[in-house]
Each structure stands twice: as structure tokens, then as C-alpha cells.
Length: 446
Image 1 (cartoon, rainbow, N blue to C red):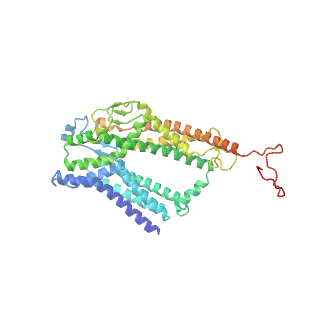
Image 2: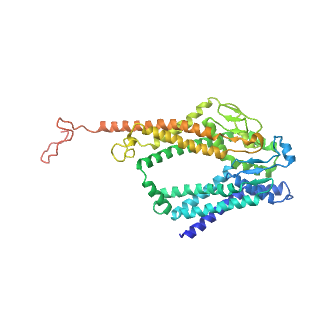
Image 3: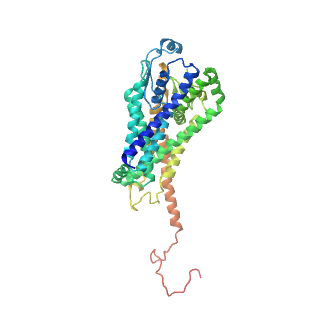
């Protein structure tokens, strides 16, 4: 396809992605407007609320100011003053990343990943800025510069992921941007490229493996405590329309809860307000936001809570065991001569690097998943990104270190086994077998 066609298709698909995300936020609000409020309130208020929710889902800060009556009903100190809401409803960001990944793969397959990516990112930047400008009122206003940058950044992340996956799967020279990157990488020292590839695969794979375990844990807690969650729904008295809107909000928070579950598995846990803590060693909570899904939180210390640290250590070990090639493999030393990859300290480099990658991934996700959800003590919600990143780097690094040295030892034992299995031709005249004589009729073993 031509560049113009690729740009138009990418821009159109980005527009559809934004409309779908905005529609997911708008439909339950419009249902609430029609059923609960009987069409008596200005509908533009709900359009603005949907725009603010979509922007929040991409990390854009929202500054709210409650009216005096509502602020007094909350009972929180300083509720009448303007306060920021900085927590990202990551479910909306995941929708954008999924569409962006598709845009990146399609553009790279047509050989114009850069053109398609720029078009999609530009559309998201315009959409974010327009929504923030149109939805801003005195009581609720989103940051304009964040609205222009952060949704576009989310789209760019997904486009890059899709383009890289397509480039790795298909001919790297088909796409101009992919070919350029591969040529630049080819100019780097091979040992540096191979080491970086191994480290990223182990660290990122182990980090996302922990997120998968956390997802299973969150699903299990919701299933076990379903009766508690249903009781909280009934106590709110929100009705069917309000319940639908609340459920959509909770679904958008599921990725946040999965990240918080990973922080819980690592040990630092997370907070639901200043002075609170939810960790394997114990739970200390004060007043929490009225979200029924939070009824699944563990209410007491878990037995043998410290043993949960075995999970990330084991993931780091398995990642290194699978990814790191044995020392006898040509992948470990492709030149067939002495190389830094054959040094005794090289597995330590892999272990430390893998831990750093895992810590960086989980620390950034922890930072993105938390923030302020209200005034006063509700300004601190989510995990501590520095604590999560530091502990993740330590425990994953320990596991990857052990796995890398185990893979090295495995290579040595396999090499020794192969050497011992070879027939020996040592007959006192050297290590080579005697030359073959075509005139002899002696048959081996006769």
C-alpha cells in the first residue's frame, strides 16, 4: 500500500479505538442519566464525565472540587478544597494498547510502520487535547498538556510492540524502520546484543509471569469472596443502572488490582489510604473507597506470608534455565573461541541484568497503577514503586543468578557426558584412528 493509505487507515483505526474506549465509559453514564435521573439533568455533564474517565484511563490527572454540601457529607478534612485524582484506570489503556498493537503490526507488514505509527499517535494526541478542552469545567478539569501527551504515549507503546513483533516474525527488510533498527543493532558488538537479548527475555518474562500469577490470585479472591462483594453492592443501593456504571469502573480497575497483587506477592504490598497497608505480613485498613470489589481484600495476615517470595525467585530461576544456552552450545560461544560469555562471571551479569529489568518493569507498572483517588488520606493509594522495583530486582536477580549458573553447569555436564560417550582411539600412536586399508578383509568384531 501507499504511505498515504497506510496513514489514513492507521488514523481511522486509532479514531475507532478512542471512540470504543469513550463509549465504554459513556454508555453506563447515559443509562444512569436516563433511568436514575429521569433525563432531568443536563446530558453534557455525563459526556464530560465520560471524557474525564477516558483521560484518567490513560494517566491524565484530573483536579476536582466538590460542592460544599457533598464535601461536608464525606467527612474528610479538606474535602471542600480542590484535590487531584491521579490514579489511572488501566483497563482503558489496555484497550488502546490492543488497538495500537494491531496498527503497528499492520503498518509494519505493509512496510510503513513509521508512517502508520505517527498517524495513530497524532490522532490520539488530538483526541486527548480536544476531550480535555471540551470537558473542562470549574469543578473538574484535566491537565491539557497531559491530555495531549499521555494518550499518545500509550498509543505509541502499543504501536512499537506491534511493529517489533511483526518485524521479528517477517522479513526484517520489508519495513524501512525495522530494517534501519536492525542495521544499527548489527553495528553493535555481538556479545552486547546477545547479552541484552537474554537479559530482557529473562527479566521481562519473569515480571509478566508474576503478573500472571497475580491475576490468578485476584480471580481466586474474587471467586471466594463473591458473597461479600454482592453484599457491598446491595448496601450501596445503587440500583441496576448505578450497579452497571460501578461494574464498568471496577472492570477498568482490574489491571490495577493485578499489579497490586504482584506487589503483594513481592512483599511490599500496597496502600488504600495514608497509614494503611495490605501485605502478606498483615492488613491495616482505615476507611476505604466504597468499591465493592475491594471486599475481596485479605483482612488478616496470611500464614507463611514470606513464602510467597518463592514465586518470583522460582520464576527468575526458570527463566534463566530456559533462556540461557548451555556453555557447550554454540549459542553460548558462537565463534568457537574464548569469549566473555565463557567467563565464570558472565552468569552473574545475566542474573544482575535480569533482576534490573524485572525491577524496572514492575516498578514502572506500580507507579502507573497507583495515585490519588480523593482528598486527605485517599491521596495515597497503590504500591510504593521504589519498594516494589527494589524488591523485584533483588528476588528476581537471585533466581536468575542461580538459574544462569545452573545452565552453565548443565552445559558442562552435558559436554563431559558427550566426551565420555565417544570411542577412544588411543593406541599408543596418537589420538587418531589408523588409516583405512581397502585390501583388508578384517571385519570389526569378528
